[in-house]
Image 1 (cartoon, rainbow over the protein chains, first blue to last red):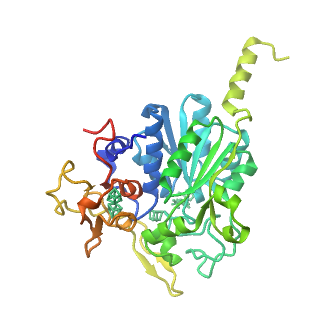
Image 2: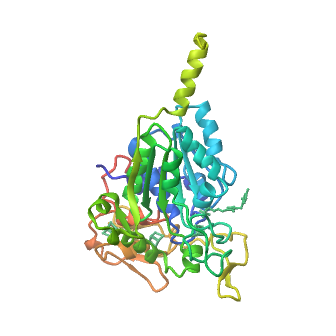
Image 3: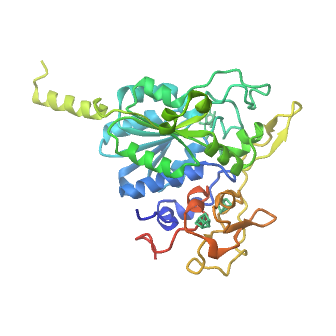
Length: 280
Length: 106
Ligand SMILES: Cc1ncc(C[n+]2csc(CCOP(=O)(O)OP(=O)(O)O)c2C)c(N)n1
Ligand code: SF4
Ligand code: SF4
Ligand code: SF4
């Protein structure tokens, strides 16, 4: 496999205008952006055929830095915009980049309905377990008993599992990895872009400045080490006894189903049928 | 986004100032003699934010950190071009990839 060099990656960045980027030192968002660009570069999709849609949040700033067609929308609403784009231009590869708050809190409704419709979007949920941009309010993925600025005495909320939510709602390609496993994220993104249907990739990421500091998780490197040590691949889970896998982040493709009709396909078929006039 | 964080009375860190400050851009002084072609590992100091991830995860000890957190190439001969630093740098600021492995390279 020819390697993708930084030079290639820099060709996909809005190089002259926007860098160095706005994210804090050690924030995983940049690593995830790198993995997405490597995936697109490897698939050799022309930049103009990619539509990158994002909401509001630190993670959602990714669309600002990648030199694709981009749409930086409202907090929680990227999937709604993306659905519109995909319906109008089904040949476009639509990639949604969203945060945990963006996707599962304010945007939870759009998220489950895109999954239910099985519309061909690639939704990359960057889960840093907190609202980073607005200063550390807890999100639906903040672990119970962890601290955030809106739960200074510990979080009492149970947690959303983003992947299980997507599977339950009907997404047909669901995968999870961490920012540390950047090659895995790259391969999962590749597979997700090629999958004809709603695909969700959850990337566990590090927010060392807000989440990390509030929960004493150490510096960026320490948080990355934690991702390495506290995660386990799906294959290993099947082999190991339950007590060894308890509490670990399971990485891997959790669901893949290519037999469910894709939404824009169904719509095109409907239009075709009505054009022929035999809808009775 | 660099922001001012302060401890509140309960010891919880709170946000003081919501306006993103402009990121200070590092000067290009460090290792300026090393050009892209000559060194096995090239660091773009203009973009580097001194997070230390490249130094922590380099498997061979090629990289080291100055006292202010700036990464530098300490043992260039040790680099095995594994690209770990390329992949894990959040700022696109370092490359240890083998030159000539990519058709886009000049
Ligand atoms: C409608 C609306 N409500 C609230 C906000 C404020 N707001 C901006 S970003 C954000 C949270 C983002 O958190 P998340 O999606 O987890 O992304 P992160 O910053 O953690 O990457 C909020 C609440 C907004 N911009 N618009
Ligand atoms: S606040 Fe957290 S998520 Fe936002 S840029 Fe900083 S480290 Fe990243
Ligand atoms: S390419 Fe690998 S060995 Fe070389 S500096 Fe980077 S991490 Fe170290
Ligand atoms: S990983 Fe990148 S930003 Fe962090 S210290 Fe190394 S070169 Fe600088």
